[in-house]
Image (cartoon, rainbow, N blue to C red; front, side, top):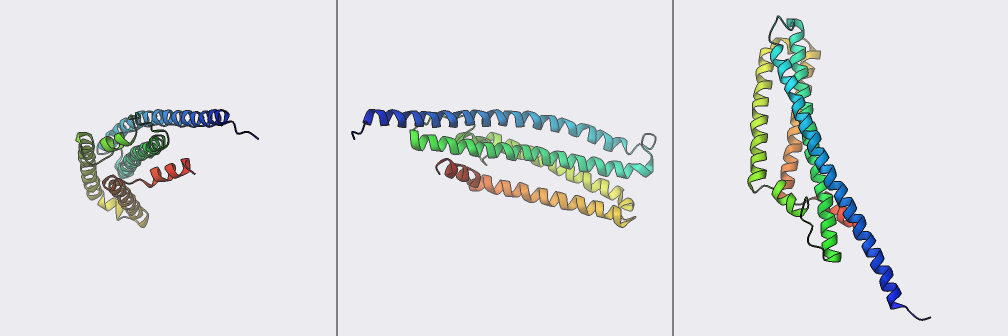
Length: 213
């Protein structure tokens, strides 16, 4: 039986082009998802404003009865913290998408020598989520500028409402729960920072291995 090199070449070429097309389509979907996450993130940030207003109004006895004020302040702090964690989740998810894109770009470069994919790929990871450059530094500064005043506000509110929290075990458990939340949140932030410093992503490696399995 005679081996048809031309036919086999065409089959391999068609398979390769199909694979490239599938990967590029997935890449486009991931980029669109990052844009959607960024849009949703800003909507969540805007939702923080009413919580701060509620916290401020709770100190006016004519608007909020004293017996409900401490509950409202705790609820406002809790909601703000949850919204902050939601924003972080959006950012972490966007980083996962960038890791997927990075793995796709790496595969396309290694197997097909395609090196022209720049947007939201490996280069974007360095310039957006790295530790050097103006953008990563300003976002880090913004994070500290938001986190430190927020922690100060929590301490001030806790001191002012100290009698409320020590009035019963149930109320005291609320502040313990809040401290546990903030501690876990801080640990996750530090873990993400270690990833940025180490410049290694297991997600990207897993995705790359999956593509090449």
